Image 1 (cartoon, rainbow, N blue to C red):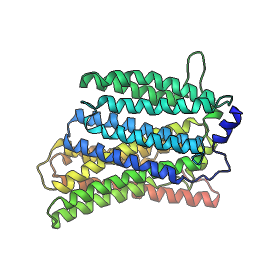
Image 2 (tube, helix red, strand yellow):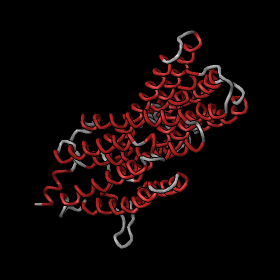
Image 3 (cartoon, rainbow, N blue to C red):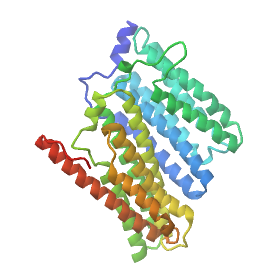
Image 4 (tube, one colour):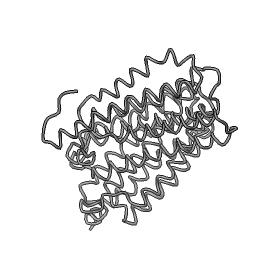
Length: 396
């Protein structure tokens, strides 16, 4: 009976591959988290705060990823899974509320919520999966979250510098062990057949979380625009901010030879789903920096040049391109030369950008990003034409 109960919880291949309304509702908590992260970073543009914000982002993102995988493995229409997701959503909101003071008085709230989500999910699912082969998968994953929970919780009671080190160790465990398939001494690793995902569903979830991140950029840019005197200068700055959002959106949608990401995820080893999650982490981190960079651009378009502002405006676009380059290498096994050339162009322009005001930095970097994306679209369409014609495209 227990094995039958576990089977009932699973998402069947014949189930809808589209994201459920429950999953879309869950994403609202991620919007709240991204907004607090961007506010935290804008208030202190130091390198230390940048590192701290990225640590917090990585933790919140891993909650989202684990939940996306859960609703890919389990049927979100089952009542127990529905209540599990809603519970994670609430605890995630508490975790996000701790973001402003996560490296201060609220460290234990952030870390405790993170550990509670991962171990609480296992505590609920393990009894329900009794007698089912997938119980072992849940057990191995839970063991490693318990291991990483030690530096998470211990770090919450340490001074700021020690907390950074311990939380980085915890993230290295969580991200690294997932890529390795959760190998556990004496118990082995999770079999690959137990890690397979519904590619179409998971690829849709990745697209949705990226759109959510772009929504945060639009929200931050709009709020910044109405906080200043609206004139020609701020209007141009707002236009550049919007152009940046459009370029990120269009750059994300560039395919490779017309190949569907969901089909590729279905046909490949489960480890690819983890690798794609890593790529999206970099893309979303770049989008987060872009939101803060747009706020600087709109509120201080002609301010005296500052290196940290260049870091924001250039860094956001650079991280986006890095994530896309990683994605194409992992999924399509090819080097996306336009993205690489775009990165080289952005890096080569830094000495010049350091003497420009924010509006100048944004203008130049938008042109560089536009050039990279335009070339990528051209090559992708040419590759797609050859694929439709049944021919092999020449090497780029």
